[in-house]
Length: 122
Image (tube, rainbow, N blue to C red):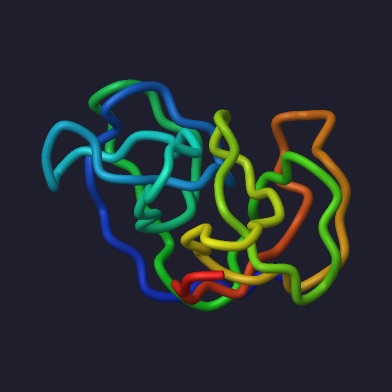
């Protein structure tokens, strides 16, 4: 069961899908889907779908629903793939959280996993 916590409201810098990992866009008022780039700092998980310039909440703590980009096991450290979905982090990655439950890659746009948020280096 997802538990939504503290969130920050911003504007979508591009189209965003619910459950995708987010990072800051052009400025601190705009969020975009994370892209898995090295050293990427994830700020939260998208609470809803949003079109460009629409308001969007980034859930920043607790246990939100998250889209999965691969198989994860409970307790795995997670980071973003190129589509903003959570995947298992490996050595030297900056993780955004840990898998709260086992999960497999999403086959739809609906989030299929849950993440316990906490930033750390693997």
